[in-house]
Length: 167
Ligand SMILES: Cc1cc2nc3c(=O)[nH]c(=O)nc-3n(C[C@H](O)[C@H](O)[C@H](O)COP(=O)(O)O)c2cc1C
Image (tube, rainbow, N blue to C red):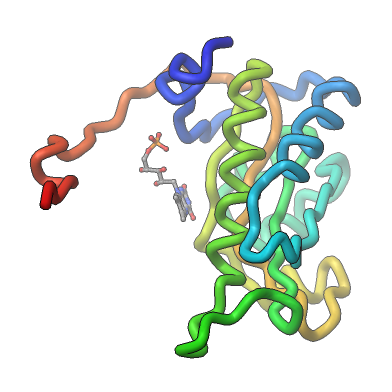
């Protein structure tokens, strides 16, 4: 799929089929994540790949929407907060790096015909408990990963004049 078609086709999928995700596709998505640029190339992140089968209650604690665990997988990107790049004014780039990684995952999944939905409103304590995350591993974003059970929904965007400042 052409890159600009991928951008057009991506949308937040909130209904998934049970249909399995091929291992080859999962590998490609993880390789796309590996290619993400990170500040100083520190790659201070971990990706959680969790199967949802038989774990509905666990996923409900993390994010309450039933569709969150409908797809075969949930993927999460965590920042290694002690290992990431920090600018001279102490601004940490942990979240920025993790967001880029998640965007690579989401766009790669779209290119492969799979659906995703950024989840930021999860319970971080429930995540730490469920996946036994050590200190310094901070979950930043999650997404289900599976075949969409709904058609493309085009959401409104502000006009470019409102978003861009030409100087
Ligand atoms: C950082 C971030 C956090 C988000 N968190 C959630 C969330 O917790 N739950 C949810 O249903 N959608 C979440 N979304 C999806 C947005 O609502 C969605 O991207 C936006 O409405 C635009 O729709 P589209 O993705 O279909 O283009 C999040 C998106 C981003 C980028």
